[in-house]
Image 1 (tube, rainbow, N blue to C red):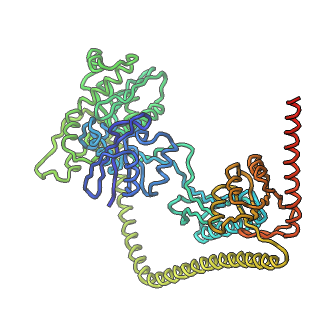
Image 2: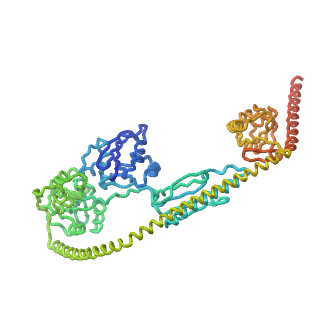
Image 3: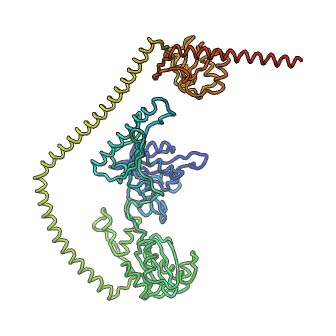
Length: 627
């Protein structure tokens, strides 16, 4: 059971001001569902339904650029194929006619339905932007910060966690026997980043992206340098070829609907080069000439493709050639003659080919059936529901069969009969071998099943053991951190009884952090505040602390001049941590009371002296102005 989405743009443009809307036809187990949706809704439907194919006439009706296309293909399920139905040699209406689909080219819903059915028939090109390689990146999930007295320890813990996850993923790839290359960037205490490039498509790699507190793992397919269009199935453009040989050889190629594909002429054009040129445009069914007796050059080309030869009953006159090629503009007489031969050949088969188009059911390649009918295969072989009484009338075939052709066909028949006999004998041998292998398989299947079950159970237990060991290591790490914190708190409590004084710790000099400290611990009048990171604090943050009636500020890094001026105005001393003895944890700090009081008195005296000097300076300036 498969689901196919056909899509066609209704109005708007991804490059214009009007947002595009799309007609969507969903084929689900024989049922059709029609919708008109926005671009975002189209993407959401694709992710929810997880269809096998999303088919569209042109990918640039949906995607602005290659990056936009890549982003979409990363989000949809890996099994979903994006298919562009039309290609260089066939438009959507032409493909619809070829496969028996009737559409109104002015109706986007009809075009979306045609895209869906054609893709389900195997028509179109899969849009490929990813290689069969997967990149796994293991790195830190956050920055280590600017530093601090515990930064090295924190960095060692994070780099150790990155190394541990990286090794687990690498071991898993080794267990599965997957080939990969690796690149590792070392960090303090472990690795800061590790990259594994696996030679396997992303959907076959059993690792998913995730993010934890310290580590992030990103799994992504490796992008190709440019977009590739891979045919869903090998379909040919069947052609009718007219040839005018000579010093200047001309070739005219038409499809089986009578449309001119290409016409070309060249001097000294060899038969091999002509064969190569015709093959590049399609698969010829008919090789035609304007002469009643085909030239040897034309017979060589016909034999190279095993095509049907078409010759007129008599040499074609110039007037008839001009009449047939009147609506075209051939460059020279040689191209006119080749084109006239191709048109005349098409006209001889035109009624039969139109009859084929009317009678074949939708889903069959009408061009392939036309080609077989031109070669002589009855139409009833392609029509399952054809009645027994119905007979196909064969028209006279304008083909001259030479003795050389008959001898070649007789030789081919004998070779095929001999090959058929060999293959029949080989088929009997293979059937006997299959029966022998089946009996052997029955005897070992139960043992093999038990072995596989046991191996799978062991793998499951090993996985559980690895996870439990990882959880144990994480728990031990947390216990060590808590024990270190408890020891620090014990030391602080001990020192509190030996002439040390508690101060309150402000991690960042921001209004939000001040509010948090006040909410959790309370900021009282006369408190001493220890600011770990003073950068970023301005007038507002300083005034907020001053309004609490604090006694002094201890700081680590330099403050902004605005904060310094605010503290100076309020006569609140600022003391650098290097001037006193201080011991700090994350939320708690204590200072040597005696040392702090000495520095505090000195800072207060300095502030008083600066204030007096400032007043004296103002008085001196005032006296000068009076004089």
